[in-house]
Length: 380
View 1 (cartoon, helix red, strand yellow):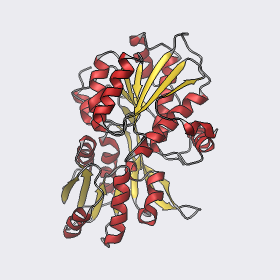
View 2 (cartoon, one colour; view 1 turned 90 degrees about the vertical axis):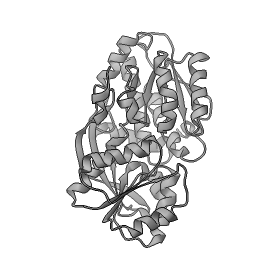
View 3 (cartoon, helix red, strand yellow; view 1 turned 60 degrees about the vertical axis):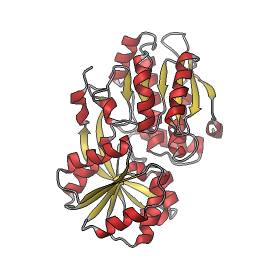
């Protein structure tokens, strides 16, 4: 099944499916396949397409384009998909600033947007919309769960670090909401930053007893390598975005011992997850990440809704999506009133695997049935 790994830009793939109606369903995927953080988009795409391949249906066409992590390009691609290709559904965006550039206009035009990753607070709250669903999380969730976990573990003086963009500000807000205590400092970096000497010096000079950071993709790799060489001796905590299997193998030994929160782990013990991990490794020759799991669940949510309605019947399709009638790899999943997940968030520890490389090991549950606070602002 290595052929699945060769999916490229502008791909038109017809997945083999059985439909409630014979009309073709078109899905436009806009995701990051080049540049910094591209492995996130690659994994979302590969998980999504694996579910499509396994579905056994043949009436869905998936069109895939690379946004190169550029909001202007993502906006242009979404317009092309809606106006030229007449897609029924958009999906795929990794970064919250790109989601804010695409989603509001798309859903107002009657297109469904189903997010496999980005979950900015505005889209969960004041800008929620009946055609917008998030299958991953609201940006605060994993960070808030780590705040709760660190409080329970007795850490009293954490220092926080994140990039200055919507997901970064959401991350620290979410952490503080469930930590419910004072933090030593909040440090915001630039998006795409690679040199963290000044930030590490600021952490060193503080009286913090722990570090919580959110630096997804290559930013986290750069930071952790510099952190290891700094000699600063503080326990490190974060969310899965900085500790997926790809990142920790690039970081190496510096990642060992770090704790991170995730809605998913490859060693979660449920049948759907066992099937997914085995199928993904067979298809692509690598261990799936959180992003691949989210892409897989997003596709399976769409497929479950298509069993009941075609997107052209918007009310029926919307209701079918709300039901979330599919087996998720995370075990528990339901939508809140703002179409964002209510789910358990787990704690993982980075350990040395049997092959000597860092890997994540499931520790337990940080928070059960977490729900974002922004649903109260949603007027759907």
